[in-house]
Length: 265
Image (cartoon, rainbow, N blue to C red; front, side, top):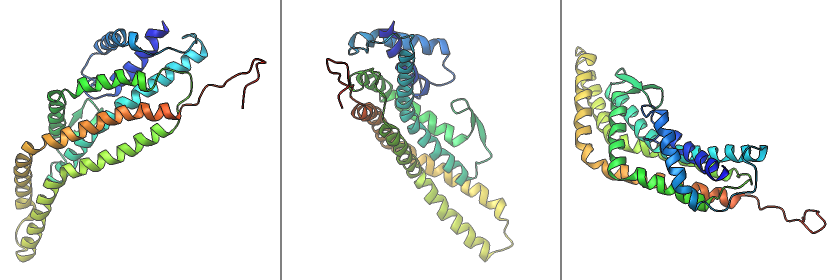
């Protein structure tokens, strides 16, 4: 039971938090079935498990730790898509499409039309680059780099995950910079035009111009989005691989005991 439950917990944690796999449109039964299938495949290559009853307090703590590891690995990849969605939010607000919001089933909130469009493009690029298969491969490798153990994790991996979130959101702003720069020039020109001719209705002519300019620049940048998307996916996969190594380095070694039973210092 332990050889199946503990790997399954880490796998289900990643499936719940990772993009594409954890989408709310995917039925829960299919997520569990996928997790069981992956656990059956990965279980034979899992290193030696700790000698603990899976239904004891120590076994439940291992389950909680494995769930936390899987959620962190999936969340590190989810941040990449959050950066793309942030680029769409900034772009939509700059274009004047802040009112065009829809319900996002992934985040259970409201997101702009441009944000959902870029998120859909990122999902298609994610599938086209076979990044979902590479993510599953990194999950299988994590059982070797971070074996299932009863030793606690250190806080270094979580600090690295927080720093990764800041870097990726900076990349999201960089994705939106071409459209923001173009619309900044348009807004400056409209401001000068309104100053020269105060009788012009800025809201009547400014909104169509900024909207058309935003869509035009977005159309020009679409063919070049493949490279930054692949770069973000590669960095996300590399972060998924780095987190188990960081936690493995910080794990506490098991205490050695003398023949008399007293623990060595």
